[in-house]
Image 1 (cartoon, rainbow, N blue to C red):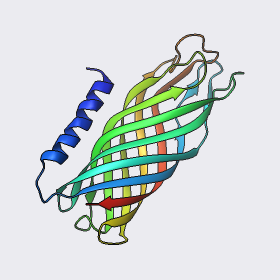
Image 2 (image 1 turned 90 degrees about the vertical axis):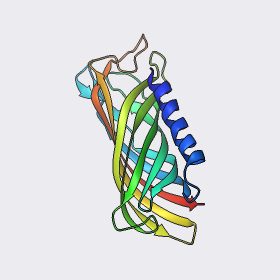
Image 3 (image 1 turned 120 degrees about the vertical axis):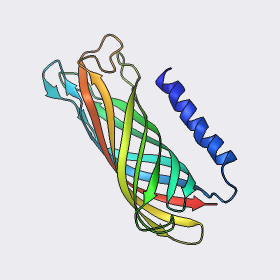
Image 4 (image 1 turned 180 degrees about the vertical axis):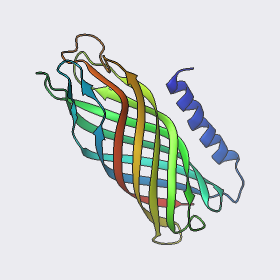
Length: 202
């Protein structure tokens, strides 16, 4: 079963759980803006590190309560950045997307205020714009911590920090579909994101 098929099955599972879950369960939708930094890609051609520009990103999450202090969550994040491979190759645009299924667990009590931990499993998609490079999808996970500020009965502000770990497991030719000027490789790709989100619960 392909990674995309697995992700589709996970997303469908979250939707079915939301539809068939207990009548008392609450649902939440969060929209985020964030800023992402990266490392973890090497230039095999001249044995240097490729540079990935830190940049803004957006994300969205849909959650459903599992119990008073935990929620199941479907999380999506997207960053459009610039990769400078070095070795005489021109920089090109790179879009990095995450789709994860996971959840949050509040440390101090119910889902209405305070600190929580967050995490998820899924996949990362790398979509380069340069000729000779192709889209790659790899398994990944995220871990983080956040704080939840209620602004009203059904609206809250979230501040989160997440680390994203992608298992690339490439000894050379990462994203290369033929004709690459520079050969890239990575074992693990790491990104770290600071996010601010607005949650609506119903």
